[in-house]
Image 1: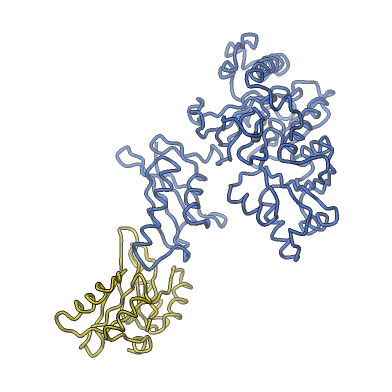
Image 2: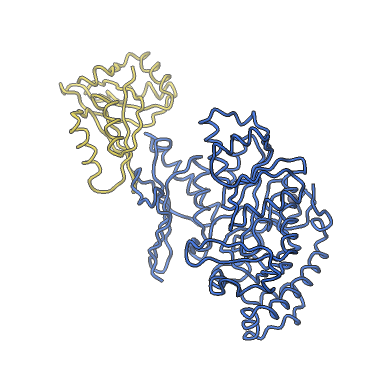
Length: 432
Length: 143
Ligand SMILES: [Zn+2]
């Protein structure tokens, strides 16, 4: 099912032509209307008139979260405030808040892009969608709400919180699709058990989850416990909100709405493109946003691009599961390592979530990496042979995942330093 | 004819074995036999005590990872070739040994071999058939 079939299934060559035209237009507009971009382009001798190919975008400067803060509140807007019909803001956990704005046309585009994502996840106008994202300055609630209305579904704008009431409404209103974070979906499943509500007795069939990274194992758990098909979607307020990318019913990667965004995957250290299919930082340029265009916004989110054609017929490339934040990345013997990769390699062996810690040292100019794993009753054996097989299994799994040989040390339970109940994940002793 | 053994995970760092024996002593648990299998990083301490369930609980409360497993205690005459005879019977029957360790009983006449086999039921059957003397858990615990 498609919302805008011609756009979503456009041949790649045509798509790239459209991207180029829209890119040139966006760069020209920000160079004219946004002093921040105009000054930078001028300093670097960049003239959007000279854009000849999509690769030329790589000459342009990045936009960082800090740039949004420095231009608080309206410094990066590309239209006068009278043309802005909506304002959203991301709360600043590490510094000042940021403000983003939408023109009337931006809201229409946003609604359509979210409708695409709902549609590709299998939803139709017949669905009853319960939106348990917070409504307010956060883009999640309103973003999904407008998209769901655009689709023609029945929307329950319940907002976040009050879990028992969520379940009551779900029963009474015969909700068919749930929108929230994946962790909240599991909380709902727990609360249903407490309340004696059988999820199989509900009308719920779909779950659209986003706003935090989650794993394939978590998807299976949600699907089994709630009896639904859970799909992943991605967005961030700096570039729009939800609607940037979302999964189709293949449930293997999120199609990027590439007619509205250009996506780059870059090595977070060198800022050069990674090899096709490798993990890197997602960098996004908006192509159609009027009020708040973003040029090469560094999301700090780590993922890889899937360029193989998708059986669903959409020509848009896909984003694979997010593996963490570039701020958490480690470089060991020249290889980029993300804590979440280590976690999934350990998880594959044991099936439970062990406490672990990655320790990096440097001896004789060589990086030495050790992963300490806390032993637990479920994988402690009285036989040395079995115990060693377990440790070797983790080593092999890590080598396969990272392409690096990493030493694994089994340590006593509760011996790793805890931080807010969780083991501290990385200790980097290297002094560079 | 099986005896309960407790296995404790120990990191190879100073004071861990002392910590374990102190917990057992504080709880008035007597150690009958002990063996350590170790690697460079960690070891598996195996213990035969007079009250395995209580010992396991005390050590778990003390933060240790513990599993209780069943082993066989074989009494072997303390003479040349005593153990060889027993192992010969097992090898003939195709029973493979995971690990074994020994101690001498209080009278000092006979050795007790604590053994763990790949297939415990089969091993016990073979041993009983050969007339080897197996020691019951009551005997071991009260030794
Ligand atoms: Zn698809």
